[in-house]
Length: 407
Image (cartoon, rainbow, N blue to C red; front, top):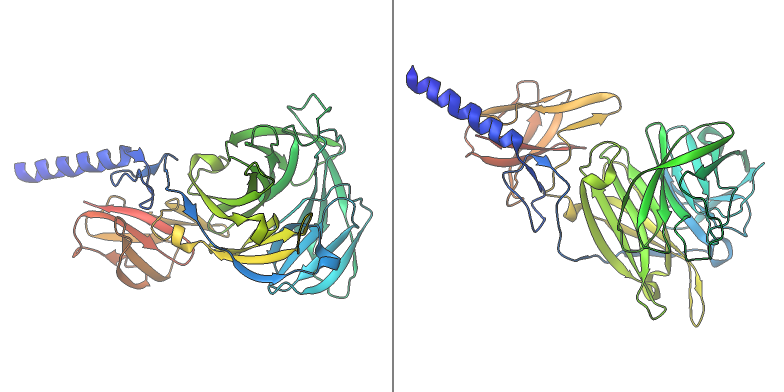
C-alpha cells in the first residue's frame, strides 16, 4: 500500500511538473525544449529559404498592378491597386482570367488587399503611401452576388475608419508608419497589418466586420518583421497566418519573405511560433503583393505585380507548400471544426489517450525525431499506446495536431 501511495505521488509530481513547463515546443526550432508543454512563443529558427513554384505569368493587360489575393470556391480572386477601376478578377489556379466583375457604388482610391469570411469578401481601400489619407475604408461585398456567374456587376458597401494613434498626416511619402496593404478576417473581426516604411515593423489593428459612421481602429499588438508587409492570409481551420513582405537590399533590389505564424493564443498572433521564410528577389518574383492559403493545409499562392523600370518583369502567380516547416510542430491542444471543440486527453497519460468529438484517421509521431511510429482509425475506445516508451508524441488528425506526454 505504501509503495502504491509513493507511486501515485510520483506520478502526480511528474504530471504537475510537466504541466508547469513552458518553452519552445517546436522540434524544428534551434531552442526546442522537449520538456515544455505550453508554447511561450520563444522558438528560434535557422535562416530558412524556399523556392516558390512558378505557376504562370499573369495577364499584363488586365493584372499589371494586381494587389491582394483570395482563394475560395475553387478560384483565385484579385484586384488592381489605386488608379485602376473597381473590378474584381476571378482566376483559375493556373492564372487564367475567368471573369471580370464590376463593383458599383464604390471608389478605388488605393485598393491593396482582399480577405473573406463565409458570407462576404472584403476589399482594403487603405493604401496610404503618402501618409496623408483621411478617407481609409473597407469595402464589403456579398459573396452570394459575386458567386452568381450571371452577374457581371455587384454592389459594395464602403465602411470608413481611422487609426487611433495617428495624429500627424504630413507623411512624408514612403517614410512613415501608417501605410497598410494587408488584413485578415477572423471570427467577427478584421485585423489590419500596417506597412511601416519608417521602422520596418508591423502593428496589428482590430476592427469589427460591420459598423456605422467612422470607426477608430486600435492597436492590439506589434512585431519587428524586418520589412514591409504587403499582404496576409488566414487558415480558419488550422489557425495559421502568413504575412507576405519584402525588404530593400540597399541597391534598388528587393528580397521577398513570408512570416509563418501558428500555435498562438487567440487574439495575440505574435505570441506563438514565428518563422521567417526567404522566398527570393524581385528579379525572379516581381513585386510580391498577394498571398492566399488553402484551408487546412500549408499550401497556397503568391502573386506579384509587374515591374517596369530598366527591365520589365511581368505579373506572376506562384504556389507553395510549407508542410515541411510544420510536420513536427504542435498546434493548440484544442481546435475547432465549425463550432465543435476537439480535445485530446488525458495529458500527460500512462497508456491510453482519447480524442473528444472526432472519428477518423490519425498518425502518431515521435516528437523529437518527427518519425511516424503508428497510425490507425480512431473510434470512441481511445488509442492504446501502452507498448510505447515514455516520451513526447504528436497525434495528428486531418486538421489538427496534439502534443501529448507519456509518463
